[in-house]
Image 1 (cartoon, rainbow, N blue to C red):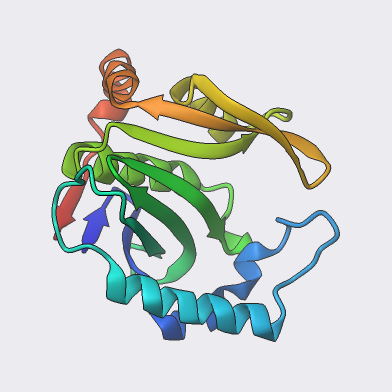
Image 2 (image 1 turned 120 degrees about the vertical axis):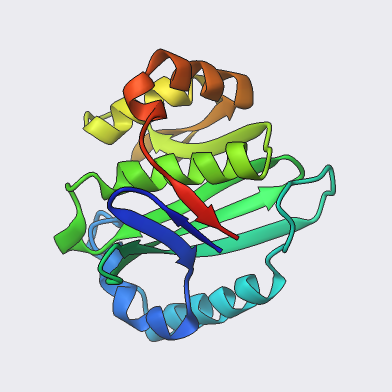
Length: 193
């Protein structure tokens, strides 16, 4: 599976690519904690399991089976610059984490990952809902986008000494958002399943 946008594409992350991406977590934990060798091994193992158990259909069903996809975030020159973990269950998907290498942050790639994930989830897999955790405080371009998309809050919780929320995006709100933002709706994308 590969889904292309203007600057990046998503495909399944390969186990051997995990080692080069440990810096992508830098800055995520407030105290600068980096993954241990054991955590890196566990993540590499999880990538292999996710790749081997990922569904091979082109539409989500009402099945309660849980599927995990670990996507590589790849520049169009084939440089792997980050990863995204997404869970699929029934007709919904949840972004667990997106991490970019420090040198590739602030170029709009995170926003493009969000866009491609929604195109895959809603337009290809026919999901009815997407959930994502996001901080309540702070300002950034991507937070503004996510707050506009994820207009419903399912829950709030404390994480890393900050208050976060579980946002919910329905398929209907996603469609209305695209209709109200033709410049986003017209961004090219292509999928090769």
